[in-house]
Image (tube, rainbow, N blue to C red; front, side, top):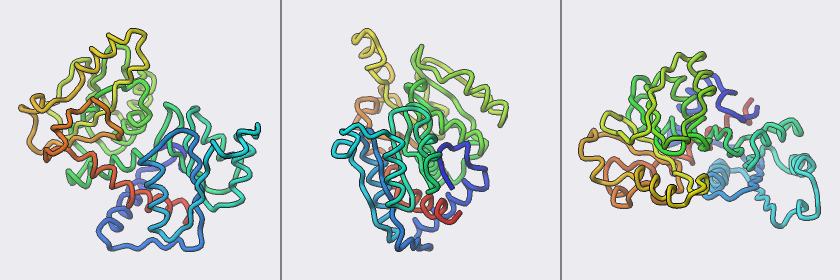
Length: 296
């Protein structure tokens, strides 16, 4: 099966993947995909997603083919679709990241091999959402009923779009905090509300005191015409240690990484900071995903 969007999964599928990841994490389950090959086709830069896919494959006894656009026949004019059709003959599953929205679903139509979306433009990043849900459940013991605040550029962050959908599926309470003009698409939120009854609270002023989970993403300076305005907004939304003085002691701070200046580095050593652990959770989660898509 393919995993292109979190929408492709039913609640029972996500629950099965999260439980599998938990068993792997605790050393209670061994994933043996010996003889299978993962191809990682990343058409834009990545550290955590690419390396954790490769590490997950290796820990599952798979071999890895690492595709590099800069040294491929794309430089000779080969099309994206021809590249997918060719590489799919060399591997059993393809993990793809591409800057254009919808490109990974298009790629899945060109091959019968399972395709996993590693991020397509500002659209979807389903395995990151699964990592986020797993990290929340692992840290807080549950998802349902938690107060989750998403802060940053919510208009362009594919991670946030996927996560809102996943949180709605599992009954979390969601608050969205973003600069004016960088709010999440209202039509998307209306769709999530129709499907899951999620009534999102929104605002343009940073507020974290009532959050069980604070999930932060970067304010993208390149989205602003005025660099001084960008700097001002980044400063306003930068989370400093002093901002957490009234926050819940057991609040978990998450971030998809890389973080630039949206979280003060002094927070890294605080017990609330869970983002590096979150990144490491990508290994058992993506092992579970590879096992899931190859077993269907």
